[in-house]
Image (cartoon, rainbow, N blue to C red; front, side, top):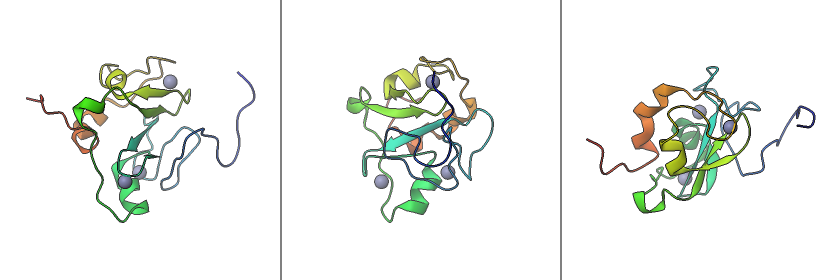
Length: 120
Ligand SMILES: [Zn+2]
Ligand SMILES: [Zn+2]
Ligand SMILES: [Zn+2]
């Protein structure tokens, strides 16, 4: 398990955002369960939320197309495992790796990150 990381750059992946804590909470979403960061295919950088992307980037965020849902683009801030998008979407608000609870409210925002063509 190792010691608790302190200070900057505790993540193995490129990650930016506003007031990001050690479990990827940010200035916009900082509830107990807001512990994921999602990479964007336009810049291949992880952000805790789309608003952080908007603050850090000049370009419009691009959603992941369904044929790339097998890519690892969702970082669990609790265990720092990078999950495949399809695993995250099927996770039922719980990290498949460490079982940390994810915020179910994120589901309402999935269409800002993932292109869910088969969504009803
Ligand atoms: Zn981008
Ligand atoms: Zn944010
Ligand atoms: Zn986890």
